[in-house]
Image (cartoon, rainbow, N blue to C red; front, side):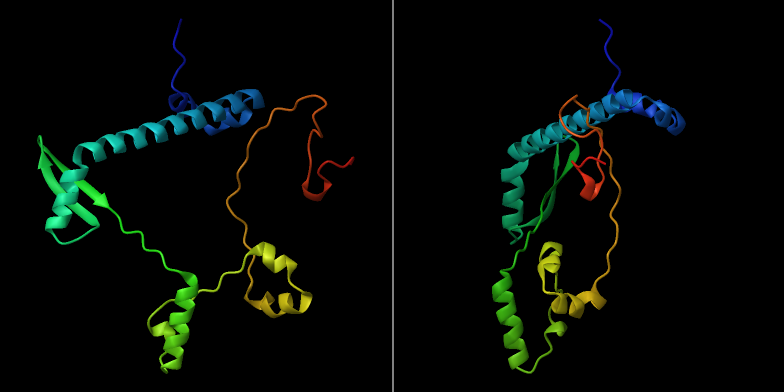
Length: 174
């Protein structure tokens, strides 16, 4: 049996014009193979990171402790390599308590923006549910931008629904 070429190499051997002219079934096969390769690579990367943590975690933690820190990067030599062990900080704040602290700063006569960045976020689903007067109040601050386009192929199964759809027309006879 001849082994199938690696998915990434296979895609890399095409030029854009060739990929654009492929039948959708072939393009779908390539997309599926690249996605599978990506999933496999992510799994292997996590596995190898776990191996490194098992091998060097205690030593790295001891070096952090010796340096008087719980997180951060430490470096040490092992078998001709410099091992760079990073344990990043992941700071989280309780939003309710932050609001209370900001209000306390205001009561002290301080400008909270001298200490913290204040960002108000609006969930689009909530915005759409607001009464018109509230929406109108926030409208000047709202900018709608398009994200990065993505595409996927879904094989059509006879009798399993419409062959194609466009937004609000989905599932309707057009």
